[in-house]
Image (cartoon, each protein chain N blue to C red):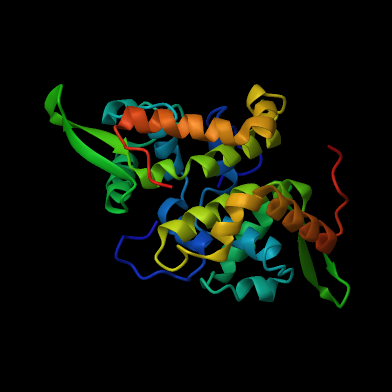
Length: 145
Length: 145
């Protein structure tokens, strides 16, 4: 993942996206922040894939630099922080869901899962419901269309 | 990216997908194979992001192990190979297009591009047309629905 001030390697939007989350862990952190609504460091550290603490700290810093998350003092404990997704991150929900569907279809476990079936017929509703609840939870306004 | 025989870190389909293409280069190679229809090593090596030859060789080997591409002798030069996407890779087109749209929206260059506008209204047609032409080019049959 490149630094925010590194020059882009190309004008391709796939390449641009991969500069931000083209690694093993960044999308795991965004998954936990948005789909599992984990907003504290210790909860993000408890992800089932076993992220290392230095990797988590690095990814959170880069995601904040890139404008995908915000970091604020935890009202419950001022020595700690809470992390929230921004609208830029909420915009990744369609891509994350396509990744879930592809991963579930391709792996042995999820081939007949309910999500795959409902994704076929109710894709738009699923995405907008999910984005709506993430925005509510993260205190974001509905963007203007 | 994990080896084909490594145990999965979790049952999450996002994690499964990232075991396959959670790095800076694998999706660049798949982009060139499918969207730019580059099928020879030297053409893939010429990608505008400047992939290193050992990285390209490694990613092609892993993609073949994972069943996302096939490798055959080049009919024009038996010392060389041609690489083609499989149906598993063609299934990544919706995710790749979502990544393109997100990347184009988020970067300065592509915010008002034609793709973003037409993606809103003609998403399904765009995806199926693209998958159809990749299948034709790669000699794949239409999958049964």
